[in-house]
Image (cartoon, rainbow, N blue to C red; front, side, top):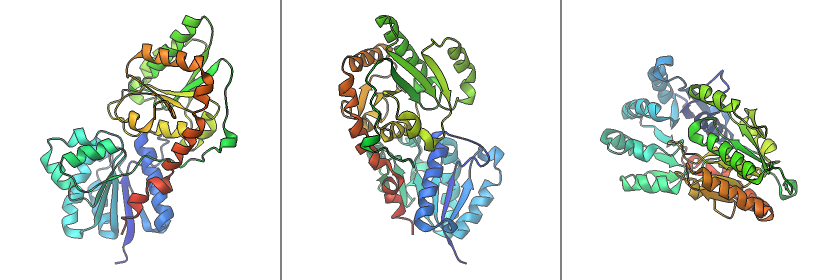
Length: 348
């Protein structure tokens, strides 16, 4: 049998316009693999909907493992519970190279105490995590097959000549992430409102971008009814258009406290557009955003701290604008051909 090079098993959401981190990363990794080994050498297996919507998944996975040399999976929590034992069982027969590309930062805590899952994952050819902290945590659990692979996006970086510098009020701010309470959306709105009220003028405007979580639409619609005139919802931006939209902003606000946060794509979007980001000191943000170099770090769930940081950059906007070049330099390392190299090198 003439084996295909790679099967990518992940959340593609065929037929749907899904912009969550898992789907976006699955598509980006798949595109990078196709460029490396050729489109004809890649098979895609969609896990969207889980076992209820995709009850043929075990049979399709069996078929693809029979036909492919490498299996690359990008599951969320439920998918990990299903795919790990299936791939481990089938691999007793086929002896394929198995690769787990981790999406988000939840894996070390999730598998802690799960001895059978840890044992199975240790047999994988490679586990590719987004941050050094995750790599260290898995190493402490006895893993020797973990590799650092930063998150990445297929974006066109701005050049220094294309950087946009805002020099007068009102300074334009935005959030650029899934619209949900845990991403700090209401905290960002409240901080902007409190600054403008305290100054007695509109020093900042705020645009909220992103797909509204299905389970949080009622919450957001209630919040939206209370928007002051300088706060607007801008809808959904295609992930490959983020630089075009963000380049005109003064700062991106990212006061997240979302439990599953990993290497947030929001940071890549902001840096690729040459826009410094104000992020919460939550999960791995402090590893990615360099405080005072390409953005700022504030405590999570702390509206007064975010308020004070906005006042600080308002007092010295030239210092904030001076970070733009550092943002572009940082973003260069987030391009797929560089970030995914560690995985591509291991595809047999």
